[in-house]
Amino acid sequence: MDRKHSFEPSVRTGESLTPYSSAQETDDRGMAFVIPQALAAICQGRSDGQEWLSRLPETVRRLEDEWALILGAPFDGAEVSCSWVATAALPNGEQAVLKVGLPHFEGEQEIEGLRFWNGDPTVQLLEADLATNAMLLERCKPGTALRSLPEPEQDAVIAKLLRRLWRVPSAPHGFRHLSAMAVNWREHTLADRESWPDAGLVSEGLRLFAELAAPAAGDVLLATDLHAGNVLRAKREPWLVIDPKPFIGDPAYDATQHLFNCEERLRNDPRGTIERFADLLEVDRERVRLWTLARAAAEPRDDWANWKMDVARAISR
Ligand SMILES: Nc1ncnc2c1ncn2[C@@H]1O[C@H](COP(=O)(O)OP(=O)(O)OP(=O)(O)O)[C@@H](O)[C@H]1O
Ligand SMILES: [Mg+2]
Image 1 (cartoon, protein in one colour):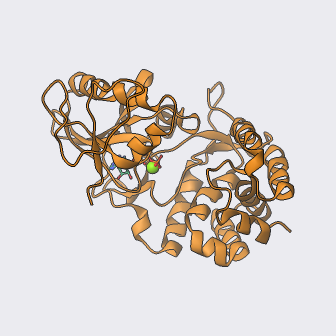
Image 2 (cartoon, protein in one colour):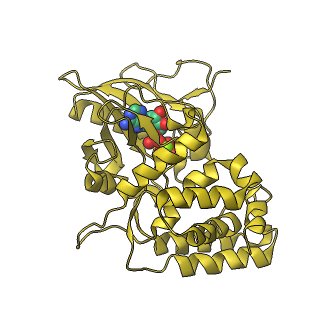
Image 3 (cartoon, rainbow, N blue to C red):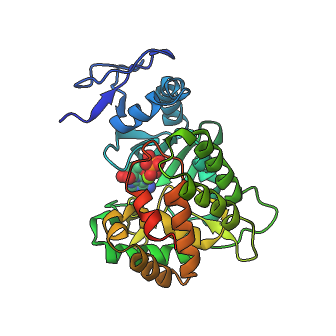
C-alpha cells in the first residue's frame, strides 16, 4: 500500500489534499515534497492545518539553505503524526534530523525542553527556529524505537529515563504548569458533553484533574509524552528520548503515557500494571492510579466508546 501523500506547495488554504501515488508533485526546485499520510490526515482535520501545510515546503527549503543541510526522505509510519521529520546531513558529514512541528498546545515548548535537558537523556538540539517550531536534532542511529522490545523491557528503560528527566528548572523559567494542561483538557471535554458515555465517571475524572494537577512541592519538569515510540536506539547512549512536551508537575503523571500505550496489559490487569510500573518509577502507586483514572475517564477524545472507559471503571474504586 502506498502510505505517502505528496503535496504541491502552491496548494492554497481550503483546497483539499489528495493522495498521490508517487512524486508527481514538485516544489519550486523541481523536487518532490512528500507529506506523510498521518500528518496530512491530521492537518485536514484542523482549521489551521492546511495553511500550515501550505507553508511547510517553503519553511523546509529555507532551513535547508540556512543550516546548509542535505535532506533525505521524510520519516513516515505509525510514529509520525504531528510533525514533518527528515534525515539531514550537515556540511561536516554529521548526521542529523530536521523536525518541523505542527503547532499544538501540548508541544509548544519542545525546543525549550530540549534546551533544558541538553542531551541528558534527550537528543541534543543542534539548531532551532522558534518562529516555525523547527529543530535540527542529533540523529539517533540506528534509531530503532523502544517499542520493538517486549513491554516489560520497555518498562525498565522508560522508568530509568523518566527518573533522569525529572529535574527542577531553576527560576525564572517559562515552562507551563500541568494545571494548564488540565484546564485545556477540561474545556475540550466539557464542550463535548453530549458524547459522554457515563456522566458520573467523566465528572469524577474532571474533578481529579483539577485536584491532582494543583502545584505541589515535589513538582519537576515532565516529558508528558514519554512512550516507547519516543525512545530511540542511539550510540551516545543506548536509548535517547525524542519528542518531549514539557510541563512542570507531579512525576506520577508521567507514568500514564507509557501505560496507555500498553493497552492489552492495562485492560487485562489495570491495577497490577499500574502498581508494578509505579514501583519501578518509585512514585506513589495511588497517585498513578488516580492520574490513570482521570485520563481514562475524562481526557478529550474523538471516540468516547473506546476501551479507556472500561479501564476507568475497573480502577475507579
Ligand atoms: N533525533 C532523531 N533521530 C532519529 N530519528 C528520529 C529523530 N527524531 C525523530 N525521528 C523519527 O521521526 C519519527 C517522528 O518523530 P517525533 O516523534 O518527534 O514526531 P511526532 O510526529 O511529533 O510524533 P508524535 O506522533 O509522537 O507527536 C520518530 O518516530 C522517528 O522515527
Ligand atoms: Mg513521537
